[in-house]
Amino acid sequence: MPPVLPGGMRRSGQGKRGVWVVGWLVAVVLGLWLVHGYAPDAHGFYPLCGTFGWSGLHCPGCGSLRAIHHLTHGRLLAALGANAVLVLGCGAVMVWGLARWRRGRALGWESALVRPWVVVLLVGLLLMFTLLRNLPWAPFSWLAP
Image (cartoon, rainbow, N blue to C red; front, side, top):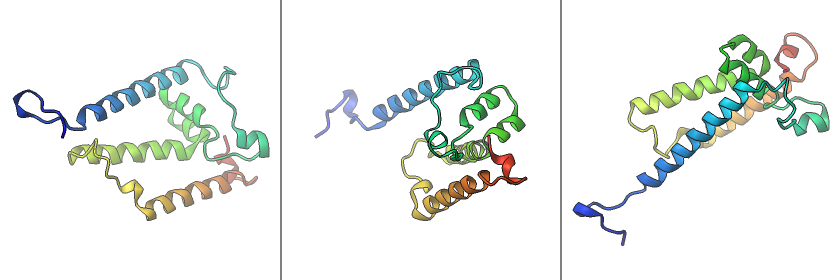
């Protein structure tokens, strides 16, 4: 039986969820501050892509730090050039999050993203992006960071 709080209220999971949300927001803000202030091209303390180092192929995440750096400085076209799928994905997630917030389900754990067809679609899009950005001909070579 959950503990009874003053006034007969029962404790729900809202407190723990709020702590996690605040923790994630603090981590995201600190990460954005770091990438904003220290350009990935100029500072060598950022991790290197293991896929690119091992195979010479650009994975879907290659160029993400540069894209985030450009986004935090307001350079949308440069960010798209570094990693188009990250920029478009961030925009889609923001629209999706705003729609959930307007419907009052911003912090709900039920999600359209866990439906099998959505997962298959997203994996397929990432695989297609990976394939296209590694082709050596224009316009596909423009997708490489």
